[in-house]
Amino acid sequence: MTSSLSDVQSSFPKPATGESTQPPTPALTAAFDPGRFHDGAADIVSRLTTYLGDRSVRGLDLQHPETLLKAARELMTLERQGIADFDADRVNQIVDLYTETGIPVHSPGYMGRQFSGVVPLASLMDLVGSVVNQPSSFYEAGQLPNVAERLMAEELNRFIGWDRDRFAMVTTSGGSLANMTALLAARNRAFPQIWTAGADSTPGRPAIAVSEEAHYSVTRAAGVLGIGERQIIRLPVDRAGRIRPDLAAPVLDEAHRRGLRPFCLVASAGTTSMGAFDPLEELAALARRYGLWLHVDGAHGASLLLSDRHRHRLRGIEQADSLTWDAHKMLFMPAPCTLLFYRDKAAARGAFRQRASYVFDDEPDVYSAYDSADKNFECTKRPMIMPLWTVWSVYGPALFAQKIDRLCAVTRQAHEMVAAEPDFAVAHEPESNILCFRYRPDGLDPATVHRLQLEIRNRIRDGGRFFISKVDIDGTAALRVVVMNHLINADHLAMLITEIRDIGQRVLRASATARHDQRKGSHS
Ligand SMILES: *Cc1c(COP(=O)(O)O)cnc(C)c1O
Image (cartoon, rainbow, N blue to C red; front, top):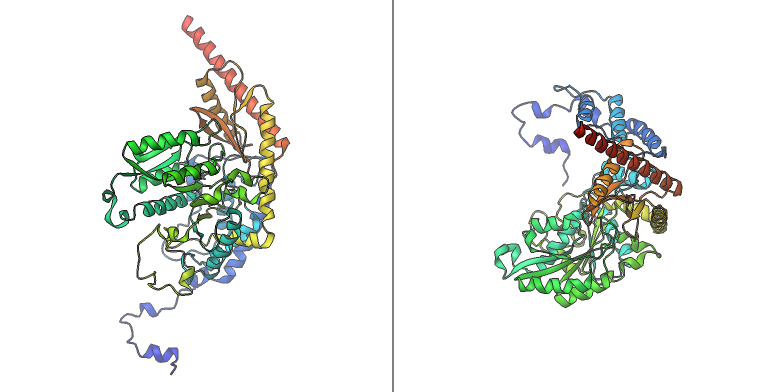
């Protein structure tokens, strides 16, 4: 028996007030009008195309927050009663303000951070994701995203090399969350009782071993998980920033003597500061010897697996237990898009052990077997895989490999150029696309060198032509260049070197004059 909608309605009592039966106002309907999408899109797409087409060498236009606050506030409607009319002008001004105040990630002047200009197709797919709005933790809500995750996991695992029937992958909102999730899985494997009985249910204090160069998200996760910063075992690194396996064993022995119970060793495949790759093969052997879960933080550098030329940096990765891989770094996706891989899918499910009846079925069926919710912290999660899977599907893996090779080659060239300048000093040999160096003419004491780099970095930013970053290496600041743009060439590097020298000399001259004036002042 079927019944019509009006039959069903008439079988319910009428609401006491007439309110809920009012049709939506025309203004409400208009705001959701598909025509609005088309008209708005035409303007926005043409503005963004102009933005993308601007390849001039430029850095950040850093505005004072109060100035920007004022400009942004002026774009907010004052209408508080009815729904304000669509105002194309206002929308265009918001888009302009958004693009103008951003780091120009498509410009060759941008060499500062680890996110990058995005493959345009990926941006379009992100837009599709915002229209269809399919959060991806559950197959029911995001069918294609969940299938795409499966496919992308298989594709990338071919470069990792794990057993395809046993490994697992889950997307997370950023590498920091992936690192924390992996640590949680590792802790739950070693101390299964903590999840229900709490932290004081274990004999000895759970601890993790990390590189002195580990990303702050790793040590932060130790705080969040209740491991406590004091239970972080710091493994010494060599001058290039890589963990020294020979020094790690004594440090672990000493930790055991102190009553610590290390359960996880975190290695970096591309440290954030210098892009250094820890020796994974040796660390895997060490982890086996001490019964540790080996987590590889490859947020930055895992993508090198796609390059025949650079894959060797991750030799031994197949022996790891888990791997963090940021696609919004060296796979050039809109942020965030992170993939967390586990060698063993049972361990992946161990990260979050609880059950919630409203989402988790007791008996997984053919659909819920594709859910990722039992493996990620997020409930509602962006279908972040779609831009990556689409670009991969349309162009194939060579797009990524070629760009990665180019970025690493340009960084090597930058290294040669900087090393050839007598008043510059390189801090390391680049292993990927990150290069750290200092402008340091002879005769400066370490404190002056330190301050000089900070001053140069900020003045370069304020100059608005280049955007680079800084990092502390062995307690002294250094300039840091991250080559994320394949359009950067030797001319841009030469321009940057010249600008650094000009600024550096100006800063040194100004402080010499200041000292001179001070001395004169104290004599008179
Ligand atoms: C960038 C980075 C992270 C943090 O990842 P997010 O995606 O920014 O949260 C962690 N580890 C390393 C080595 C990184 O370079």
